[in-house]
Length: 292
Ligand SMILES: NC(=O)c1ccc[n+]([C@@H]2O[C@H](COP(=O)([O-])OP(=O)(O)OC[C@H]3O[C@@H](n4cnc5c(N)ncnc54)[C@H](OP(=O)(O)O)[C@@H]3O)[C@@H](O)[C@H]2O)c1
Image 1 (cartoon, rainbow, N blue to C red):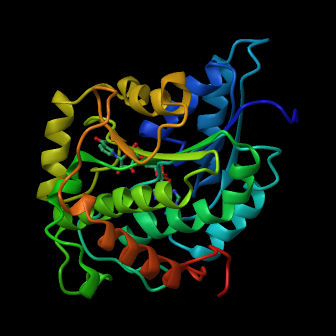
Image 2 (cartoon, protein in one colour):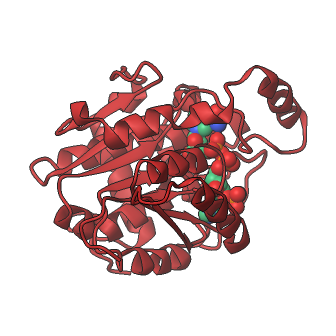
């Protein structure tokens, strides 16, 4: 394994937006590490991408397994990823939408853990590697649907009393933005930038569940952008020289920073979320070191 090859880690790289992004970066000559919870799906995706990489381009694709519903598994994933000689870009892409409240192995609302807490944990566990690879970029895949969050939900973080599919999903995507802005602030001067994005509405597996919302998603897939469009915004954020040093922004399909919701711009809320997230993931909120 070469130590100077540009390396991107893309979580949730076996399907949808993560897969398309991995494919593009690998074709452009990057070493790409995709992660997910299912080894078979990851292997199939990696094999498909492998066949598209031109000989001599330098592109390479490998996969690592880690289940975001379990912090133990995320810590194991971080150990594997830290064996990479360098990580130039980390794309926190894993995301789910669920029709009902479910509880993770660690006792958290499943969407809160998979869509936010596990990203928070993995990012911290990779920070030393990212800093050592600087200039490096962290890219958080949020969504325009963060606007559906009706509040921060700090009094019912586990969504035991306030679960409703779209606002709950929106809340987790709001957390992605608050996390991005606070992390960007804390990493100023480190050579590691942090930006968030909305990829567009893309026909992927994310809304494939039973019930009325699943049916609406199925119908809406007819009008959505084909999934090859999915990589446009993440690849821009990962590779564009125009973004050297740009941090703490939220990008959308226009490839320019856009203003997120009022809730997403609240610094105190970002700090409160940070402290709660650190406590729940066993990290020291100041140093980011594992304490639990
Ligand atoms: N599609 C859209 O229109 C849209 C719009 C805005 C934002 N987004 C965001 O884009 C991101 C990617 O979503 P997508 O639309 O590409 O959906 P997707 O095709 O369903 O991809 C989600 C990825 O996350 C993985 N994943 C789910 N649960 C996991 C877990 N517990 N542990 C590890 N990996 C897990 C999935 O693996 P499996 O295949 O094993 O489930 C898959 O690789 C999400 O953050 C989503 O919120 C999507």
